[in-house]
Each structure stands twice: as structure tokens, then as C-alpha cells.
Length: 161
Image (tube, rainbow, N blue to C red; front, side):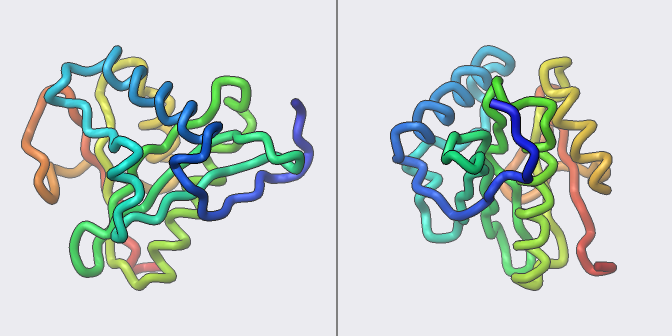
């Protein structure tokens, strides 16, 4: 499953069978790495809410490579949710493509800021590095999050774009 062209990123249904399987694996991984009270990944029903745009990345043959979502959490502010790349598609730039797509969507919507919550544990190191490369910086809890030793909060100021 080698790709020479970038993935196609488009809105998708989180209830589609292949997407549901990837999201189920995502939730399992989150529960393996964080205590239950610090798992902030959204379930499938939550990802269908009207304030959330859910997208998938697919290969030219339609193979699901990854998923991600942008939630509007306040006027002018978005939150990245449920970013996950299929194991077979890692290290191929899928996560970076999804991140760029979601940030561009936030800019198009006129958001001033997009933020996220991830874990501080080693299992989240690649995600934190991806976000840092994209310009995200550490911040305090936002929206309804509370401080936790199991959460790392990051934000990206979009006003300069």
C-alpha cells in the first residue's frame, strides 16, 4: 500500500464501517494510555454533532489512511479532535496532511485560534512533535478542560495567517 500522491481528504461519515473500525481502535489506544477521566477522545455519536466537521484521508484506491475533526468550541475558536492515522499508513505524511487540512478549514472559517488536548506520555510524543512542527505551542486548559497531569494543551494563533 505505497502511495506516491497525497491522500484525498474530505468530509466523511464516522459511522462508515472502515471509519468506525479505525475510531474504535483510536478509543482503545486512548484508554490504554490514559486514565478514564482523562480520555477526551470523542465517540462516534459525538463526532456527528453539527458543530463538528469530521474528515478522512484516503488513498487513491479508497483505503482509509486516517481521520480527524474540527470542532467549533466558541465563536472564533476551534479544537482539533480524534486525529488518528491507521497503523499501516504511519510515517507517510498522512497526519501532517490531515492537520494542514483542518487548520486551513479553521482559517477559512475565520477562527482566531485552534487548540487541542493530547497526552504527555511517550505514546503521544509523535503527535506532540507534529503539532509543534505546525506551530502549535503549549497553553493552559481551554474550554471545559481542567488541569491534569495526563493532559498537554496546545494552541495555534491563526490571526497572523
